[in-house]
Amino acid sequence: MKNGTLYLIPSNLSDPFSPTQILPSGVIATASSLNHYVAENAKTARAFLKTLGVKRPILEISILELNNQTREGDLAEMLAPLLAGQNVGLVSEAGAPGVADPGALIVALAHQHGIAVVPLVGPSSILLGLMASGLNGQTFAFHGYLPQDKTARVNAIVELELESRRRNMTQLFIETPYRNQAMYADLLLTLAPSTRLCIARDLTGNREHVQTKCVSAWRIQTLAMERLPTLFLFLARAAERGPPSQKRLR
Amino acid sequence: MKNGTLYLIPSNLSDPFSPTQILPSGVIATASSLNHYVAENAKTARAFLKTLGVKRPILEISILELNNQTREGDLAEMLAPLLAGQNVGLVSEAGAPGVADPGALIVALAHQHGIAVVPLVGPSSILLGLMASGLNGQTFAFHGYLPQDKTARVNAIVELELESRRRNMTQLFIETPYRNQAMYADLLLTLAPSTRLCIARDLTGNREHVQTKCVSAWRIQTLAMERLPTLFLFLARAAERGPPSQKRLR
Image (cartoon, rainbow over all chains, first blue to last red; front, side, top):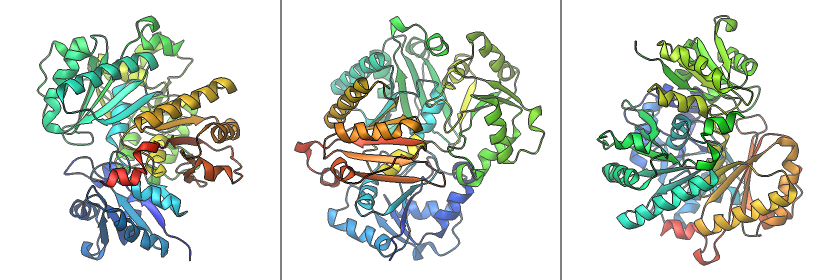
């Protein structure tokens, strides 16, 4: 029998959301047609499918959870429909499945079994933030969360800035909303005045706001960081390179 | 007067394309409504807008080019409609504007002038490839093109693999289609047998194919790399960490 296909379906970054703003209609149609899902959280996945406009009773759709509680033995059950010729959808809690979430595990397993993996277009805060930052999109790195401990976090920022300067690399990371203010304070204290810092908040949401400034400019304004999903990005300026615009254009 | 908004509109990765597979209908509506565009290539941008279903005569839409030939003095002209309260769209040759293209320049300038920048959802080969690879999406870096010179390229691969092992970091890069075969050969020769290598070809296109295997498994098959847009991704295995699935699930 021919294997099914594993479809990777990005989900909403903010709530409430309008499906026609975040997913192509062809992707909504594919997502609505599937009877098997793997999701980080079944309840959120059901709400997502309902908002997409799935007409069938949502409880008839099988949704298996893949998260930090999942045991390795459970993965076989997730793979079973694929091996039996059924298509399966993978959704994350927010954004692209397999990027900064545990979904990559089932994707890796699908490859091991020769199952076709098809990534579908949808929202990703990492990509949207990078686009909107105006920072270097030719070389960049995403680091997930930085350490929670203050000293370790400041050290991490120092190292990332050195690397950014050396490689002309945009550095991206996230923080849990209630720590945004502390992260912002540490960044302003630690980064060089000429480093460009972008704060990208609530991407695709009602309170979306993306702003890039030099650290020196951020320092002279008081920014109340709200408890919204936030992506931080920065790019250090290499003194010997001159302004990036001159560099790039000539 | 209130400034206009700079909308960042991802474009098709492959040709021909179906708009309903790659862009949300709300994004198609926004793209169709704009009278001012900045694009890497005006001709490609016109073809893109036509396929989206723009009904007005496309030649009535102003499209200014931003590419390696653009001089710094030309940027003011691109900014002018925004400062006059008009919205402007930014499109790339393929995929997300500002990511691996010169569009970031105008985005940076918009930030300097306090102009709102709104990134819209659409296709990006980097993100689609990362999702579909099953490799680590918690820590990853994109490097654009590796050096063309063989020795320099092999050295770059060696260094990226060392870094991948040390930081558990997925490494991503692209190659021009006619050099795909040489890149593939260099990767198989250089990477460790246990390193997982993903080859993501023609994403969103008719010949899309994404496959991840250990280098040892790639070596025992002959792969004719076709001259299709290809993203390469790899993740080195750290011997002392054990298989990533055990690590992640515990």
